[in-house]
Length: 368
Image 1 (cartoon, rainbow, N blue to C red):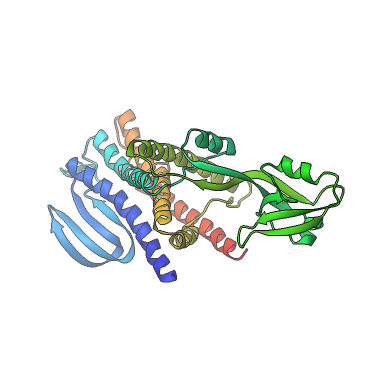
Image 2 (spheres, rainbow, N blue to C red):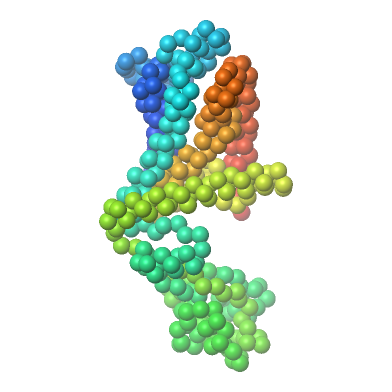
């Protein structure tokens, strides 16, 4: 299974990056910009696969992703930059379109996968609250059964002594079914002991006799989804859900970036929920164990995240490069190429340091 997960991880990263670079490649060709090389994997080069219409297609040693090298990207002199076929010689709208094309392809891949998942895969959309989930169930979007889950068990409480586990659902109290935390409180009021019928997160349903202290067992309860499912959906409905999911995940990614920046500047730590390469590898392994459709959903969500991150206005990212083009459009004069390359180089180093820092926290979480 580890070998399969490893291959799935490589395929995931390679697919997301190659799709992104394919967008740059296609729009650059349409705009008349010469694509000098389309590389599969990262240098050093293993061999030249082919040459087609002025583009060298190469196979490289590092088996992650790929890259596109456009003519004139590293040109320094104004004369070089103005040569026909150079990226810098293309019109401002063309350059912006080329830079946005990779992001657009990541969005396109995600929407296609989400469309497939919500139609034949019976995927559950992302909901940000229980009321939102209940509203979706009311309009027939999903099938939802709520239950009472144990969030916490006090270490000095009677429930802990009786062996009540956290994250188990309370199905009944003394044989009477319960649907809300209030039901549990009402049924154990005035009693010295009760029998909980529990459905643990792992294992079979079982009864646990719990003594009470002043009518309490020392547990924290909340209402949570116990059973959640969906039917196959017609394509129009699946498309609407795919677009909604794209909006929700995009918003969550932007908020996550903001939370990361705030946390790094405030406390110097990486917040929970933010993950790097190691975390993605763990998610890939978990998704492979769950099944192919779960893996596809991970690919879709990561494709959306990659699109959002790439369009951020930070040096070395596509969004940062677009800022330089917009500067040229506003002031009718490009920023000096040496300055642009220097700023992008500093941005690249900062991004690399951030990746390493997040990865360090990923590794720490492995040992918690």
